Image (cartoon, rainbow over all chains, first blue to last red; front, side, top):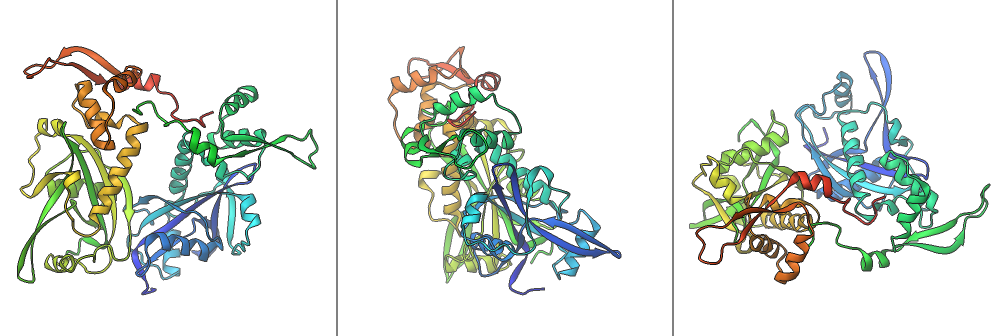
Amino acid sequence: MDPNVIPHVSIDCVVLGYDLDDLNVLLIERKMVYQGTEYLDFKLPGDLVRWDEDIDASAHRILQDLTGLRNVYLKQMQAFGEVNRLKREPRDLEWLRSIDHPEERVITIAYFALLNLDQIKSQDYIPTPNARWIPVKSVPVLAFDHNRIIEKAVEILRNEIKRNPVAFELLPKKFTLTQLQKLYEVILGTNFDKRNFRKKIAQISCVVPINEKQTNVPHKPARYYMFSQDVYEVTRKDSFDFTV
Amino acid sequence: MDPNVIPHVSIDCVVLGYDLDDLNVLLIERKMVYQGTEYLDFKLPGDLVRWDEDIDASAHRILQDLTGLRNVYLKQMQAFGEVNRLKREPRDLEWLRSIDHPEERVITIAYFALLNLDQIKSQDYIPTPNARWIPVKSVPVLAFDHNRIIEKAVEILRNEIKRNPVAFELLPKKFTLTQLQKLYEVILGTNFDKRNFRKKIAQISCVVPINEKQTNVPHKPARYYMFSQDVYEVTRKDSFDFTV
């Protein structure tokens, strides 16, 4: 095995990307032969940490190596350290052997990123051939405990979207109110009444209508809005009942 | 070295305890001789993870072994994984050698707990002889990166106290408004006007006055209050501007 890596500590990256329709997660295709049968499944972009790199640097290096994605804002999320987290399925073990990975225990530190896929397209991003965006709602059974790691990431997103302006990380710079409503509906898994939703948004000063409308749409063009960080900084209330 | 532990992954516990005067952190005395001189310093209760235990179980085991404290609610906080986090001072290295600890890199997963010291006293808690409560404001230079880990824990507490009812974890079940104000002042490092503070608290339904006053105090006895989780569940607003 590679002598440059710590055999018992890995990083896994949960990169969530929104494409105006669905919340997607960036996964890596894993091809393997197990007991004569060819399998194709998916895993999070992840790998072992090197002896000579801080864990944050490791997360950026691994994400870029495995997906091509770089300069993404990654935030540490949580460590996952169950004893048997790597040994759920016999073919997972087989795969570890095939890549000369230690079969002993690995504790993984998960990192988290939010992107809008518009932003990706505008970057000079060359995805690696086996990196795939998969809708979170149709993620199949993944390698190891990676389903659980994604569930935890989505849970964090659901909580954050209610108290911090993270929704706007997932939308293009200019968005319509219909797009904003859909984003909340997709992430929270619910439906809002259009009038009530717009009433609430109208009270949020940092969601600013701009003097520009959609073009080339088959329906009546809607007005664009943007999120203003400036206005947010000035107008945000301390976000909680116990603030004194 | 102990073959039962993973040599590169440790747990450190930041246990914060409030005693109505000060916010304290539970530390372990470390005695060592370095270059002929005897040193006494402190570190967080922490140790390496065993091969056969989940990291959460590991945190509870380590805290109990090193401090005597058990059945404490511990929450995972953050992993600290800088390359040189163990090698800040030459005597740290010397100490690692003295306890037969690997000198190679160790990534630590920090856990976090909030206690009121009243609660500790009422438990059948037998502290180990070298466990000490030290006021956070007078924590000396600690082993390794442990000062940084405590700073991060306090930062989390400062944020949380503004948006979740964590203050009440740090107070006895029954408390006076003066005690509550002091707690906020100590943690946020600020002073509040008494009248304004009481006006704000009066608006928080889940801080409930009870029909009981202080006894045996040298001043006019103050009324006791308690935090009601029941009322909190029913009355809490979604804590943020972007809630829809």
